[in-house]
Every structure is written in structure tokens, then in C-alpha cells.
Length: 167
Image (cartoon, rainbow, N blue to C red; front, side):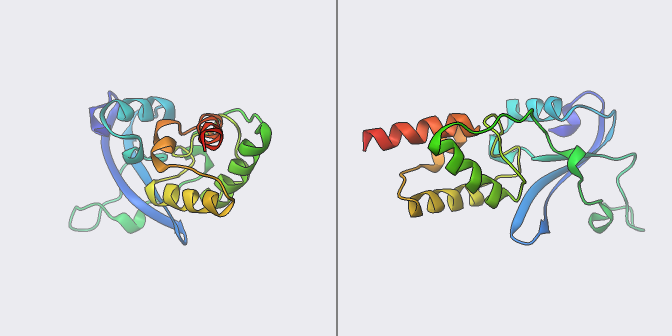
């Protein structure tokens, strides 16, 4: 699907585990250097959120092995410029603050703001399940499905708060 985007010539997507226990989908592409929002937006039109890479790395050329195949080991480790960053707005209320702390820990990021998206920060289905377990340890009811429906911190906190009121 990445090569369907105008300006993208070649693409490769793989799951990387640069930090032990933290697997993320990383997309490497050649051609025009495009905004990450444009790339994610196009992919989200065709794929479920959890299948869309969190990280996009532009390369002049994909590294090839002597036999002409993609040399996965030669692909660079992504840097901060490869991840979507949003203007930080501090979490508001107990639930957002709790969630922000858990997300930061699970996703191995410094801080999480109200408008940050779990999946854009590198979250995936296994980390979503871990999050639910951690929330239950905190005595809160939560559902994985709700995270996929409302992946921003503020959106997911609102759903989680409503679940607590219903219970």
C-alpha cells in the first residue's frame, strides 16, 4: 500500500525490536520525502490502525544484499524524526494522568500528551492487552476494543471514565 502513494518508489515494512520487548512496525521508503501524517493517512484509508506503521524512515535507496534482495540488517535504526510528534498538551484529570503514565512506561516514551495516539507512539495489539492488564491492576475496567476506537489519550480516558461510571 505504501507504493500506491504518489512519490513513493519502493517500500519495506518490518517489525523491529530495537528496545527489548518493544516491537514496532517500521516502514522504510524511497522516492519523495513525505510528511508522516500523509503516509499514515493514506494507509489508514486502506488498513486497520494496528497494521499501520508507527515509524516511517525515508532512504535514498533500500539496502540490498549481494544477491539483490533487501538487506534487513543494513536498515538503519529509526530516529525521533521518523515518528509523528504532536504539540504537547498535559493530561487533565486523574484518569488521563494515570493513562499517560502507563502509556509512557509501556511505549518507552518520555511523556504522553492529551492528543497523542497510542498507535502513533508505537503501540500495537500486544501492548494494548498489557495496558488493559495494568489498568485492571489499578482497579479500573477497560477494553482493548475501546482503545482501537479512541486511540488518543483524551479519547480513551473519556471512554474509560464512562465505563467506570456505568459499573
